[in-house]
Image (cartoon, rainbow, N blue to C red; front, side, top):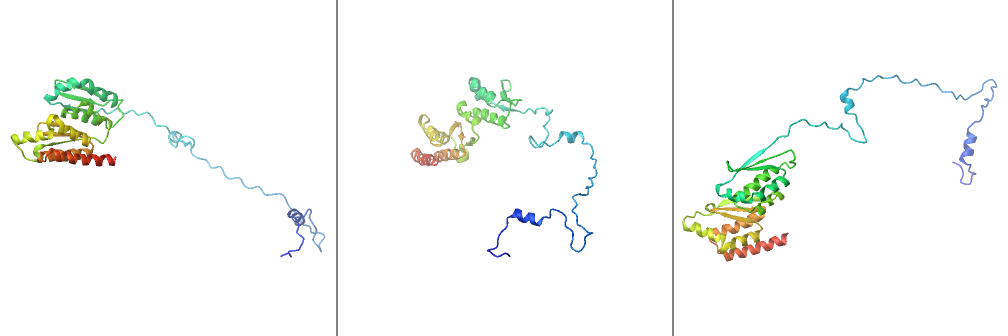
Length: 261
């Protein structure tokens, strides 16, 4: 190791000193000289490897890193599977269906892209998919829409089934809650409807649902939690609870629902 005070030489000068410019003779032997050869032996070229010619399928699946890893898909020659459903119309809903038909078929044709017709002789509404139908659940939504109308719901309310996915229809009979007969059954229906339908409207507005009273059956249209609220209120009325108490419970539940949303 050189002393700290030693004279340092630049790297270029040190390299020139260590690299011999010419061949120097070795001491004690004048005949022997060391020469530096700059010739190199040629490296043998690798042997040529013959590969099999690519087939037509391999050429079609040629990888292109800039576009795609697969060849474009060929046009499908399969035929479109057409599905159809029939919804039977009750006799007492056939006349309202004819009156409201201009409101019923446009959403099915324009929104769901279905083919629909009313078969008067068989008293059914026939639905069928077409080549323009894109939604896989369009046929079932159309059937639910027609079914809601046959149960007694207004077309403006039933059309929500086509636009929202979290709406359901629940049906139960008054006899499922309590066995009633004769005048007691009529009183139970009267308690649910109220004077001029005020009780039914109060239940609908508080629970954000739609309620249909069809003889001894009750149909409720709405979301899952909303249907539960409306059903509890109707069951309380069937069991004989005073309407005032039911109204109070509905106000409490409605306030909680507003705070939640």
